[in-house]
Image 1 (spheres, rainbow, N blue to C red):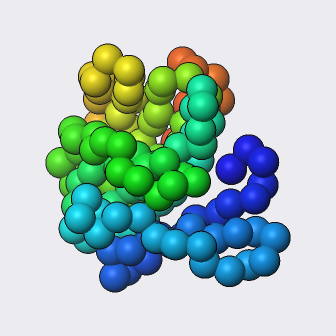
Image 2 (cartoon, one colour):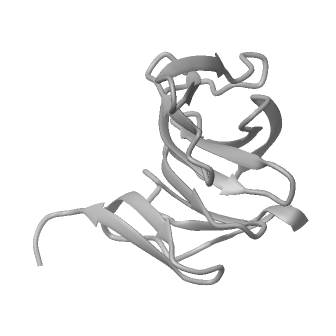
Length: 144
């Protein structure tokens, strides 16, 4: 996160753990009640107005948002048709994710909408937001 005191890990057993970077000890996990229903493949921190938000991506086709400090569920973002592999966000109310459905999605979190971009010919495995309107995807897919 922005103050470098927390980091998070996602796991095959559907869990997400939050760690204290100063002690390298787990300080807790996110809520099982609202947790993912599949392995967690991607995570990022998004700095909110008042708190740091943890975003998680999963095989259950969703991106979930959590309060990083309190590890409390905030909301679920729906829209992908396959496993979500990566998510990234900056400070504003936008995020971007990629999935096995080969379609990057830009999320406008504050107005609860999503925009799916054109389907790639190749599997997209990573994503990075460069600005609130530009992002970069990384994928695999054999040859030039």
